[in-house]
Length: 243
Image (cartoon, rainbow, N blue to C red; front, top):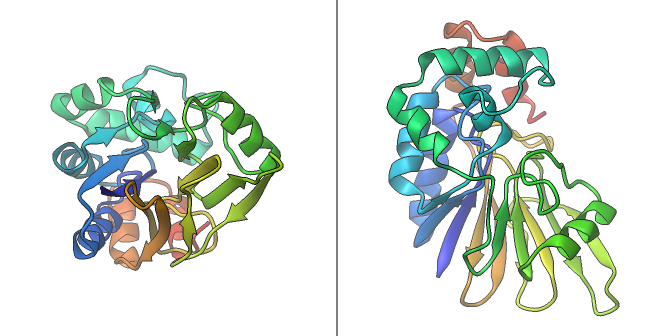
């Protein structure tokens, strides 16, 4: 089974639509989302609707939970907090009900999935080899998928049980059929690895290969929607830089 793994959509409808088109062109048979469908961007309702229709599995991210009032947003940056407050005021009760039914982790599939990490499904950013080792030690599955950092990453454990890896670029293809692996697809709606294109991961559960993919989208339109909604300018500007 070939899956599309997406994460951190952040209410960026233009990026999500571009990724879904790319997923269809590749021929993936299912979509799994690692959370943060909303937050930052200007189209939370449309993004929730698309994810609800297209994703077989969806996790809750910290921004999803913050919008619902299920965790405090006081620790968010000012733009993130303002976006969460705005989102809470505009999403429908139906969208909120969908988000409220999600969990930040799932281990029922062939791989383990967490928005943050196995150690802290909501908040931990896995951005180093040591963090990846600790996350793999805490995971109940050989292959673990995480989001949250907005950076496309892969960490693998070699025969000597040491963990190595780091950022991955478009087109990178890894054989993950043996050993333990931690994979992050990067962010659909707000990449932070210097590449402004929307990111997603193709995961083949039959051959156990993972391919990191990027797709261009209409950033000017996404940024314009943020400005039209009256959200902070920084949220629009950063889309152009992938930061």
